[in-house]
Structures are given as structure tokens and as C-alpha cells.
Length: 278
Picture 1 (cartoon, rainbow, N blue to C red):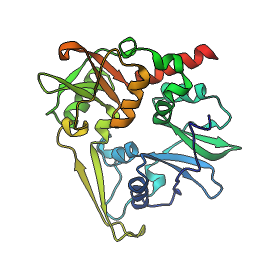
Picture 2: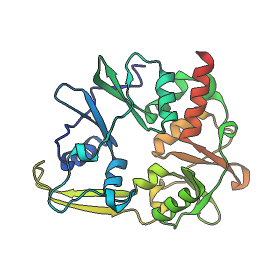
Picture 3: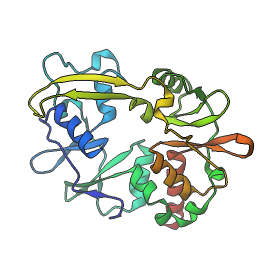
Picture 4: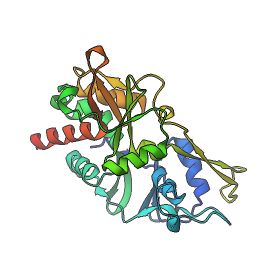
């Protein structure tokens, strides 16, 4: 458990400006920041997805934050009422919470106060150590179907529309002739980046600008995010972390695509193995 949790994580207060949130996310290369009060009690969590939603990139205009006068506070953007688990909980309980609630991170508390945070990436990092049997399994045994798919020159908005139409969170990406990798709903939302121009003061709103990746190809690594069907799940987990993607195309002989192996597929395999051993 202790190897999974990041203890004493970077946090923000409910009254902190979005300027500070963005600065901390960029400085520490983080996508989630817990929001706590003076007693370190957990009030909520703010993620880049929450920010994207606030900017109307992922929600109706009526729910958008108003940036006309100043940037909103962390409290205005955060997700409140978040699920948190006690630091004494078993890894299986944490992993099941991530899977059942479709979270990427779960705050961990001790005696009612924030102690740390655990993410899906933390589980992938410890994949082979926590579940050696599952880690040795072949990618082909856990992969999902290679569908639906989308061309690499499509836009993130095209991908969002296709995901909504098919009720899926992953899409296979191709260049017309070859599979290039997999994009997730989370990766597509993160295609919308924020640039905050300030004088480094948290009190100065500065200028908030949206930057958008023009095509899905720009979301994928320079080399193809693919894996051989005979590779182990441990190798797949390591490659996901190395390439910073949420899925891999499973490609066999003759560059034939067989399926996709996603972060969710790996975490489910890990959960089954932990439950079997419990």
C-alpha cells in the first residue's frame, strides 16, 4: 500500500485562484490537486478535466465559469463530495474504487484528514510487483476489440463525438493503412490546454488562453503506440507509462491489428488477480 500512495501531496485551498492551480499543475506535472481546508480536511479535488469542463469544453454553456472579471477559485471548479479511502485499506479496495467510479485518482485519508493520493498510473507502475501472475499473462488474452476507429487527421472534437455516439472511452487511431495507437476520452479532453500569462503572482488573473491540439496524431507519441500480442501485461503496463498514453494497439505479424490494450483492461486484470488472492 505504501508504495502506491503519494503521501503529503501538493494541495490547494478552496479560495486559491485558478491561476495558482494551473501554475502548480505545470510546475509539478500533475493532473489532480486535492482541495483542503486549514485542518487538512478534504473538500474536493480539481483536475484538468474539471478545468476543461469549466471552460465549456466538455459541458453546456450554462455551466461555464465566467472569466470576464477574474479567474474563478479552486472551490468553484473542483469536484466536491469525492470518494476517499482510508490509508489502511487494501490495494484491491483502492483499485476497485478507481474502476467502479471511473476515476483516475483517489484521495487517501488518515483519521479524517488527507494523507495522500493514489492514481491509476501508480497501479500500473507496480503491476508486476503486486500481481506477478497477471503480469506474466499475454497481451492478447486481455485486449479489447479494435473498434471503433478514427483517422489520425481527425480532430479531438471528432473523437469526442464518435465516443459519445458509440458510448465508449477508447478509440483506435490509424493513418489509413496502419494502426498508430489508442486515444482515450481523458487524452482527448487534455487536448485542450491552458496557457496562463501572469507576472507570477497568484493575485493577478493575467490572460487565459486556450490551446488545442489540431489532430489526434498530435496526442500520440512520435513512434507508434503498439505492442506485440505475445508481450506480457507487465511489458504493456511499462510501455503505457513510458509513452504516457492510455492504450496500445495490439499488432501481430504483417502489421495486422488484432485489438487494443487499454489502461482499463490492465487494471481489470490486476483487480481479478488481487481478488483471486484475497
